[in-house]
Image 1: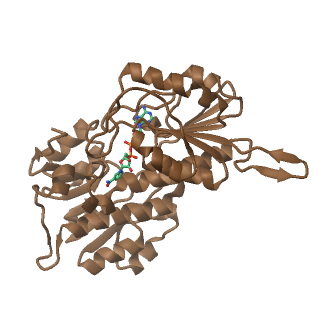
Image 2: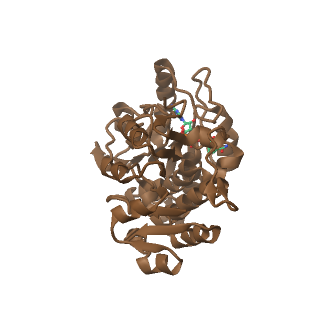
Image 3: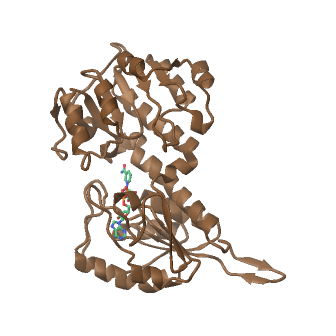
Length: 372
Ligand code: NAD
């Protein structure tokens, strides 16, 4: 079976796989084709992929034609869907709740598509969880970016010229990205506080040496997959009231709040931004799903009354090599799980709990219950 990895379009920096993972596929019995230039942005040349055993293809059409499986990081554009042959297995992030057109086109092309966002959060599938592998690196990158922008140091410093106080960092939303943001800010020596609507994370926050901010917003729930449920407008107001003072005292705020399958909650209002000290920095990690911060914009630095609001939509791309490494491993782990070594085929059993969760289209129809 042949797998094709087309080159991502700019501005994507990450590569879908690195040569070490290509080799693992080959050792398993797959043929691997990568489009020329796949690793250019992460300083991996065609030759290195070739040395690992991959075939380099200079013509996208040829790559699509030769493959039974096609893998990318980002969703396909219409041209790419046209190139997919009937019954090809296509795997990438698909954003299927918002990208109805793409989903219909994939069904019409009779492609078996898998959405990496919908890999279920069960123990067996943890090694395939690309949302988590990318969110973890994004949490790290958000803190590093904020430290570059802030005009003060993160750690406390006692110098002959006096004592420099540590930066105060407030992390809003403590899922995978938030936990890594807390850990990174702590390692840099900041004083870190954090809040999440799911009270269960309090222990995790404390175990990283940060302070959990308690705000009474009434009953909150989480789904069986561990995702937060949406708050009511009244609860959001209570949350904003409870966060106001902390926000005004923070040098850096990192917001990561998401509600799965819905727009991100708008938590930090313009008033709250204006109450911060000039020179403070906010990183809105939810910018591409609607934004947690009023005024944040995709891929822009907004300066509002002395406060910088950073809205980078591809934070994992800031550590592109590591992000490529773990994304490729997630793909490998998924394909290996369903690979029948003896018969050299993929067992595509839609009753399997993992495939049931993440296969979106198959044999001409939309088969995923939640997307349907
Ligand atoms: P996410 O990206 O959906 O959301 C980020 C965080 O925002 C969550 O912690 C959520 O509770 C929080 N949030 C939502 N609304 C908020 C609001 N108004 N104010 C403040 N915070 C708000 O979440 P995630 O990173 O995908 O992780 C969710 C949970 O799932 C975590 O506890 C994580 O450890 C767990 N998880 C489990 C598995 C598994 O395989 N079992 C895999 C990955 C993650």
